[in-house]
Length: 255
Ligand SMILES: [Zn+2]
Image (cartoon, rainbow, N blue to C red; front, side, top):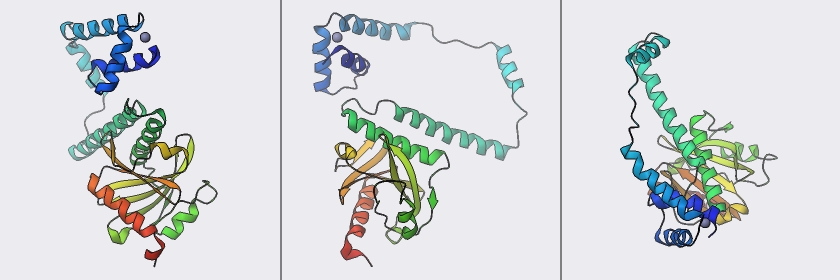
């Protein structure tokens, strides 16, 4: 471990977010490093000083009045509540997006981290920007050719509506520096994005279910492609989605 790696992990060490192996590596480096040791001491000192310091500041009443005057008169209650709720939803989505663009987890490799981070960001973006689908249709024979000429791969598109996963359409997205097709499904009120990638994403594709920032991600390989399904539906349902999709891909099941 070198100094720049250690520096990135110092905060995680202080916050108790590192697993035993990584924590030990950082500690061993810091112990023997003239640059990192004082840094860690400084962070520890800062951390102890923060709760003691008077960081709370009460704004004067005059400021409150000025802020209130700057806002338009309150609108009827129903509208206000709806816009307030919308504000919360947007706020949550934006924080999730910001969090996703930060570090996903310190233990993953750079490649995994980048791909999974991009998958989460793309999923959140698709939900918040009213840009869920570029081609909106439940007809798999319309979605598949729509990707022709837009991406190098031919994404498998299957209609799983009868199996409880409704096909909403397709979208072009951008993950790990490349254009990536997403096939969009809906389960009740939940959206599932299925990203189809090739090659470089393989390292990030683990056959087990992963959870990143509260989203479940199931990846599997089919026909030489890596398929990443992401959603906020529970792990069991996402696994079920992957199984149904996989089963529908098999020629024997085609009707
Ligand atoms: Zn160092």
